[in-house]
Length: 311
Image 1: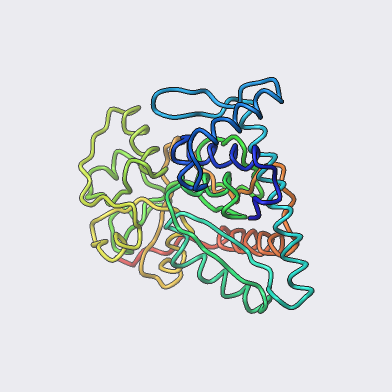
Image 2: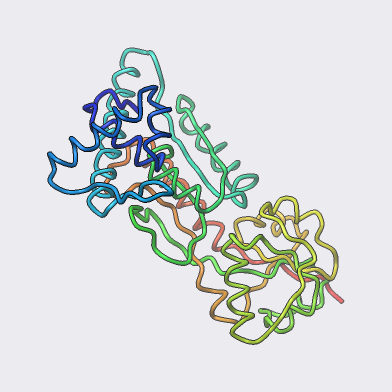
């Protein structure tokens, strides 16, 4: 981005909004903390409203602060897009698509998607950041990524949904698993087997815990990790791993695993969402990437969840 396109009070405001602290913002800006405080006071005085709630642990944006920060980020992103176009006309740089996603999409789905997109747009630059669900949202809100892909269970302020699709939590098993023969799995049955689950910050784990609590069920996880690619090779004949279809689509296609939905409605609440910054107009190249991503998501969603091995 190009913060020099903004006035000094606005630049300082955005830095504090991102850092959550005047001292941290001052360190990033290489200025004194008192200078940052003066510029914030000047801006708040000019607008006639407080932009931050100040407390001992740091500073949080007020509703007015959130609105201003979102507007400024959109302004900078639009300016960045124009400057990229100017550079490309001069032969200095190519356009870039900045993507972020959670780990389950990175090694299979996103690799194939980016390979296809590069073949269609060989001059386009691609950037992929892999992080937690919260990190994906924050990168979009800070303008560090153009598009995010993750599982969600509730709407998030400041983000626009470019595409949404049902993404139920699935029971992933080897084809010879006893529960693989049915069309769906009851939670009370699944918890009787060794479970491979994500950490408590992962949506599948959150919904599992809620569903178990609602039914009075208990489980003892065999393996816990926030990286599905670590768990998949550890999946044994009688184990069950909680996952989404896109994460294991390649293994289902190869016949290495099958996936079955749970009967419990709570485990079907999750949705897959492609997200962008609310109020931002996506550049044509980013829009083209989103369209290709949506086509890929829809194509995978139409595939079967694997056939169990014959007894």
